[in-house]
Amino acid sequence: MANELILIVEDNDKNMKLARDILQVKGYRTIEAESAEAGLPLAAAQKPDLVLMDIQLPGMNGIEALKELRASPETSAIPVLAFTASVMPQDRREIMSAGFDGFVSKPINLKEFIASIATTLGKPGGAA
Ligand code: MN
Image 1: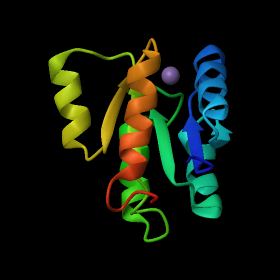
Image 2: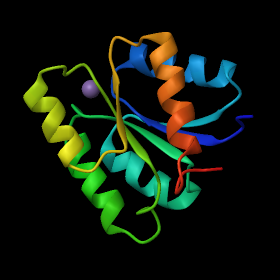
Image 3: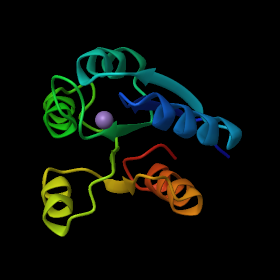
Image 4: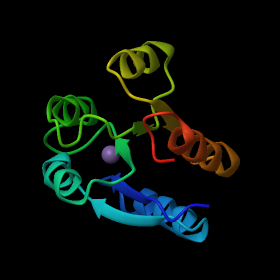
């Protein structure tokens, strides 16, 4: 299993390290960006199998970044999971209606995190 390439867009060092460590232990390859502005060109160039996207980022936020990914033919089919501490139902609805493929909450729940990644990669349109 695994070996898929996952782009993590996250501006918090601790969250980045935790996500990276878990994914690498599970056999995924990771690339990283600390902002949407850095992540978008990386996604276009590296064509990751999945993007883990923080919502609150300096500059462009994660929802705007998702729209940019969807608008570009090079990145439109890449599944994107929202990676956010926001658990308010209204925020969650806004995130899902923006078109994310799913939602991973912070702080990370290990089982839920791994399951969400695996499920999303296994979906049609995700990496097989
Ligand atoms: Mn953030």
